[in-house]
Image 1 (cartoon, rainbow, N blue to C red):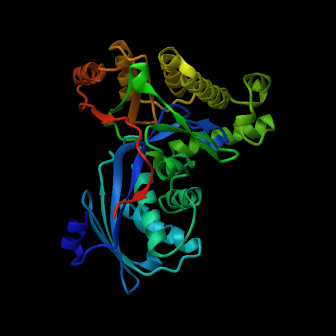
Image 2: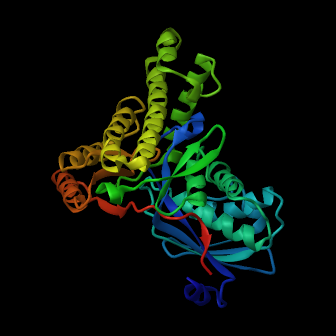
Length: 382
């Protein structure tokens, strides 16, 4: 990255920073409902090489997309689109937090698949926010930096996201999952001893790109807010299935389904946390094997109640289980993206092969496998 930056901009960068993409063991569409989730960082990551300038010009280069040039004053909501919104938007967010930095040159490279539900945008945002915060001398902790990255996504890129993706990219720990409580914003790293249990995780990128900015995500979020208001609770984290049943006359059938997903998904996260605790006390193989049923139930809920799956996701999850996976589910906002499958160690090749064959029979583009090894969060490399 440093050499490529020097070739592009004529001088070496002041540093190179990275941030990982995100996978999620379980807990989908719970973050903006003050609920729970168990995400983790993955080995795919975004990297930025940056050097400050003496003027207010921002010169950007993406190895995947191309070039862009603008003024620092132009890096704000309603002015940016595409990948530049995530990078230049980071400068705007830091200015909103009190920074008074100058222009900069930035080179971006990323191997987080775009549109795969693996938080490629959050990885870019977090790498950029971390880099500029250090260069501009803004001392903030990781959760605060994650909130700035979230502002980039919401206010500059125009996607009303929760905080899970950015928090994971900033705070992930190697070989662990993060237990998020989105009401208290408490984060606890938990061991996930899959190797000891003879298990492994596989991410299957269905290559059916999801388009969260198209409005589907915002519609689901609005539905959750309507249900919470109808139930008289601050957030769906406080709701129960009995409350949903009792409010049937005040809720549309669709809104009731949306609420049911969130209530049951939070329960599945807590059940998964209990299994991780049991595994830590010595019952690894038996306890972690039971995670498979939770993954399958999560996918069914996302498919039937929250209605955010698409045929590619459903076929990938179903085929993975038929090929030996203990459980599988879609990840991310939905409407495309990736599936996470839990399986006995050594079966990933046969599972991805079966999904590949299922896609081929339907004339779909072949899926890709992505490592689900748990990686650390955003960091400065040099």
